[in-house]
Image (cartoon, rainbow, N blue to C red; front, side, top):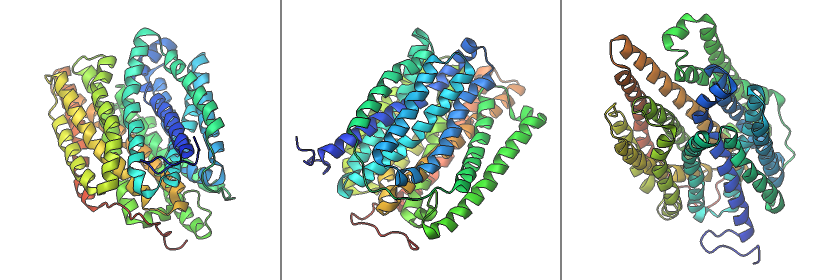
Length: 496
């Protein structure tokens, strides 16, 4: 087949279509591995002879690395060819996976997670930028629907796969199953992926990299310490207040993060005048992009927080196993994946509001139903509500991906993708930390009042879900304001 022949449905050449599918597959593997560690932590504590706080670093270090690397991807995607960026990202992920498989202990496994995260952080911005450059505006919705498959299926299959492997084969096989797939993706991608767009000889501002690392890293570290310590019952709010070291660490993390982020933003604004910004913040001059990013941030906060608290609630309150918990969220993930391409076609034909408004209403309504879950809630009811929630999210993700980046001119796609990834990562970390902290604090308070352990844990979960439900309310207003960008090329923001 002629590689220049276009697919009738997407308007993309067969060669470009192949590039996109390879990137989708690589991103799926990377995100799948990202979501497997939470279920494995109790097993790693026993197998490696480490504390819960040390084990939590396997997740914290991953999140920190993602938060530090993602803001630099705007520069990487401008400076390096598509093939080189892919080989870099997939090569790092494959190397990290190999190190994890053969790691003799905790320290080497921690290094493996950092190397893995470095590759994963690059993969999603690369995928999003490539789609925006290759796919015509009239069919971007259906292509972004494929991205929603990756975004929905991988986080759901990850814990299920992890639970099954932990019960039957051991924690090393979590990485052992992924390794051959990663190697194949790396070899095939290096052979078939072609370069997309033109590179430019932009230079990297070292001070911006340092400020970005301190800013986003400090914020995510502080959030992960709040959520991570309470998740393992080793740092309730009262205990942290009494522990001067823990309190100082949290205050210092947030303080350094806030100051560094302020300086980072100021420096980017100055560097934008000469097109030398590490992360070009002029993308926020597009009101539609800004609204879409804010909407995505709220969704990430509620989504990642909920899928973290739900397994804790099911295992602690209902006595479900890790595998059973994974199977409960699987129908919703499958529904999201199957609906993704159809939702993309609706977006291309009808725009954003047809999807975003019902999506926001459904997601908010289901989160409010989550607040009624207690120790007597049947598992089938949870599965039904989770599945309907997933459909509400599916109606939101595809139009938000497409409308946000579609509101920018092509030279800003890489920066817009980096902003999107950064907001998702930080908002997700905030949702996890806040919801777990609230769950732990309320549970401890209920126990001190004489409630049973089950009732106290149920009350804590209800309080956590209430936070997600309240955060979902602005989504309905936002859904009414976001519009589908015009199909014509959008001019660069003023000042460029």
